[in-house]
Image (cartoon, rainbow, N blue to C red; front, side, top):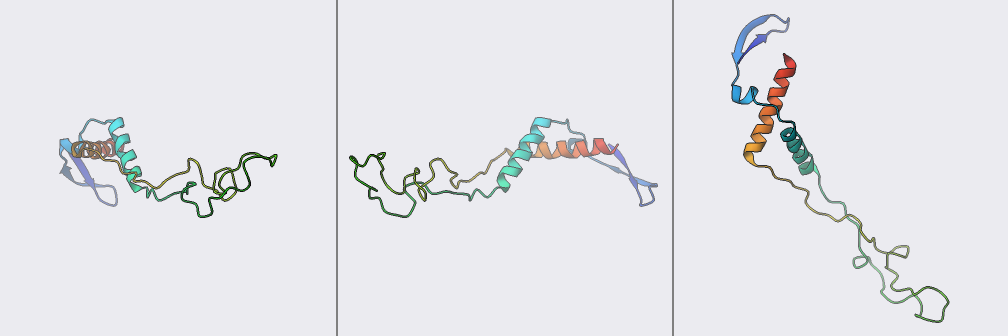
Amino acid sequence: MLIPVRNMAGETVGEVELRDEVFGARVSKPLMHQALVRQQANARLGTHSTKTRGEVRGSTRKFYRQKGTGRARAGSARSPRWRGGGVIFGPQARAKKLQTHKKLRKGAFATVLSTILIKKK
């Protein structure tokens, strides 16, 4: 595939031959999407975290006795029901890394380059 080379004035000064395997690849939107999702997921840090009732600092004694107060059965002060208690299903730190096969990554890159070249024409 021959592409014209232009100078700053827009005049054609030569031609460059581009490989069809890279710049003439078939455009695959699902492959580009997969590569983009992988790139964005790997950019995430995954350091957000909340404390569960077992990780919150504080006593584990009962607030008041089980029966006879006229109030609900209260357990530990660090229960999620109380202010200052743990969080039930909060976010936990974990790795968000995704992997893609090398051939798929190369194919996605070739698809992007081919798409750029098609839009330039």
